[in-house]
Image 1: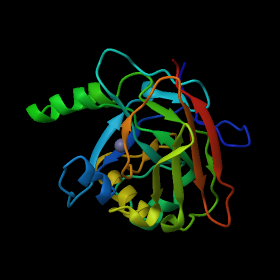
Image 2 (image 1 turned 90 degrees about the vertical axis):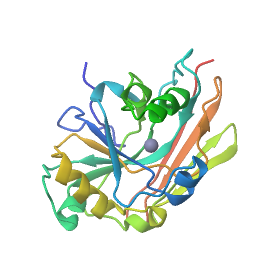
Image 3 (image 1 turned 180 degrees about the vertical axis):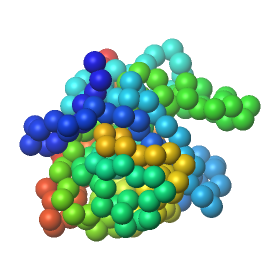
Image 4 (image 1 turned 45 degrees about the horizontal axis):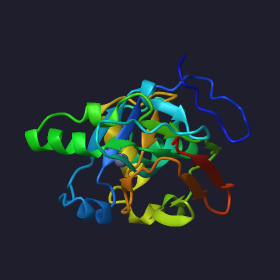
Length: 226
Ligand code: ZN
């Protein structure tokens, strides 16, 4: 059955999840930790709806394919069709803010990158996109003030701030919509800050989002399977 995005009040979005459009290297400190150059245009890729799982459940870590890295990212639920949209129309189409893990088979990805091959099998597998519930949005928040974090077993591993994005939300959505029409039910992942690493089994993950003065944040605790 198709994954349906939910809001924090328990309401389901009226469309099933579509595609998940993602950006690589949207934080300079993360590009640097993987020895990647900072891009002059956003590096875009897509995860299919079949990669989504609810972030509140126990997370399965796929085995036998090398290291599985966590990448904690701000996730945006799209509520209107966007094609070649200007930045302001694009930001106004966001109806929910949540958190996601862009799970990545890092060893597999490294081999693919070496050969110049596409990344899909490293990033688009079933379960590769744990997604939280979304904080409902009625008007665009101050994107630069959004902050989020990931703790594993009580230790801070990642923290991000909207103002550290190389491509801020309105410009990023506009650029995405030049290449791919964004539709209601699509989700956009906005990139990960530094601190990515292998996801341990049997660990407790705590993810938090501060969405500014107008909106309540998110606090999610989940565990990885042993
Ligand atoms: Zn990512």
